[in-house]
Image (tube, rainbow, N blue to C red; front, side, top):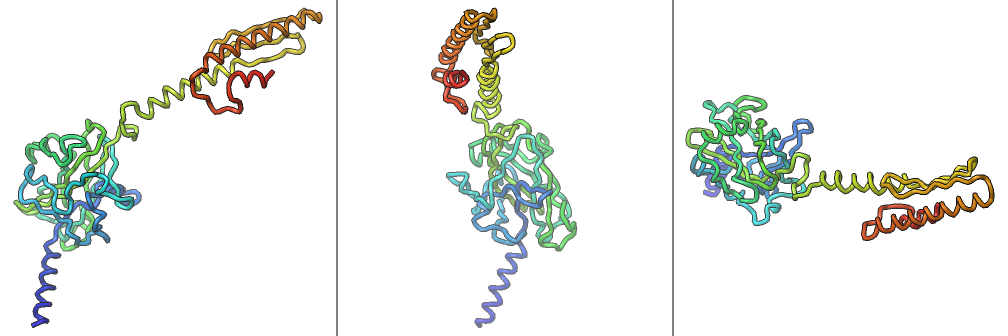
Length: 316
């Protein structure tokens, strides 16, 4: 009796595994390194490792699109989106217009007969959760986004009866996605009326790879850093104090910022030399006063000296 019960239990488990069909294994598969850069939601809770391991990720909605765009029990949204991912199984970070490779196991169905395709559906906007109210029907979605519909059977090996055959598809994201975090849904109709889906979250970043917070890294670098380098640093370099021994010619240059410089020439006599030095001193004082006013309230640049005044004093 005990043996019979054990046999029945094993049979039930085997039947459940035999009926397990496909799911999204990786949202952003890197063909070059054969590694995954972004997973489905809550994948880290019980990872399907090794590839194609049956852990209950084959979520089965009971309706076609759009009603079937509902996350299954294993992939419900998290109050904090980041909780659906981990360091080992991260959320995908992508760009609008990017082509991504998604991966799923064949589960013995590399050749499925009639192809009904695999689609990627994207929520109505960033930060709205699993709101797919923008999807009217499968046909309408595919007509608008043909790059988000691929065959199920691009598998290796491409033959039936191979549980862990690796299947992939290249999907092209819309180019008008605003930066932010979106819910997405992998959706596959196996037999007519038999549906499978997988939910995930993706972080869409600006075209330069940064998250758009209004200003952007590029603006800071091009504006502040470029301005400081071209203005302040250039002015310091140009405003040097030089001496010409042969002709007794001392020059306090104007610099790129246009500081007032003073040039005094000596006629060779001691009095003339003293007058020239005095004129240069007055020019230096004027230069220091200008630089002090220019720098007051500004952030000091990294320098061997504390400020423009000390720099000139050191040079003198």
